[in-house]
Image 1: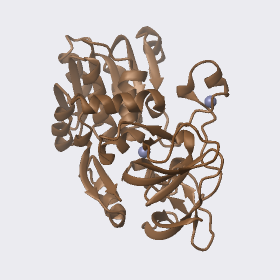
Image 2: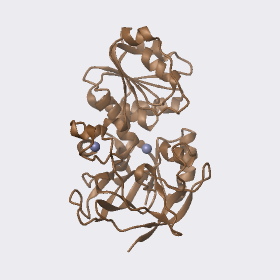
Image 3: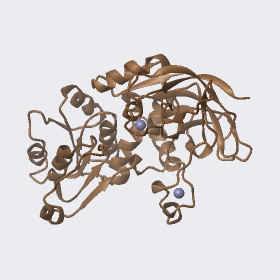
Image 4: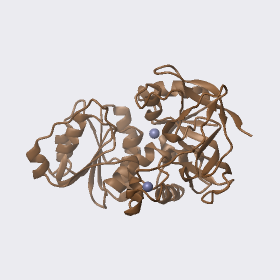
Length: 361
Ligand SMILES: [Zn+2]
Ligand SMILES: [Zn+2]
């Protein structure tokens, strides 16, 4: 029997989201039905609503979620009803060229549920990032469910499903931050602050937070920033050099996706250091860099997709670190809200008033 539940739907480009009755099928082969407990509000949800990702309206929004598996398809063995899971958008296939060369964190063939969720009139919904978790229940591929310790609250655990994982992984997986290194993070929203937390976890001893909003710089200190720089009134390149013995940071993480800021990250980097781009650029943006400097500075210019995470490896580990008091996921939760408040949460996010609003079902 299909399930009729409430969900947050973007019906048309730029229109405020609405609460709709959505129809969620019972899981078929390879699928899992998840009772969503919490789902964070991410910029990507807003991008879907604005038509910035595709034109496949209507979208069922929400993708940073945790919940409990309610039912699985006959052939599913990886998770079972009752499991507490974080949903991921990297359900590794095991057979693509990335998976077969032993790099499943780059899987090119990640999969979603086969059956479609619909509106009550039968209109098919496009779930955000193949998840669609601003809903009481959602249908995903079983591989999108990563079992974690059930003692973690869903509001905190779910954040690992997207933005927080992207930031932690930008520092730890992509940037390879090591003990004693210097790190600079440009942009101190949820992703940037997670990168700061990741650099702190990895043992970086100098962590410079760069933003143009003093409120965000204060929050960044809570995650482990040792220095802050308001780049609206201080040159961040000179500042970072001044606190790193004149050399620049070993790892510079750009968490905005802005060409001018990327250039700052490039210039604030120590010789043979690493620049990590985890902010998502717009299609029309271009960068220009002095080519001789690209060569002469050595090191690496890398991009971080989803923090180069492997959900099965990383989500349970970060939940363990959370439970041990070494990673404060709760601090990312600025407020908990209901499904009815998602549109208001978009406005707070745009105004920079929150790190994360989290919907609790
Ligand atoms: Zn694969
Ligand atoms: Zn997201």
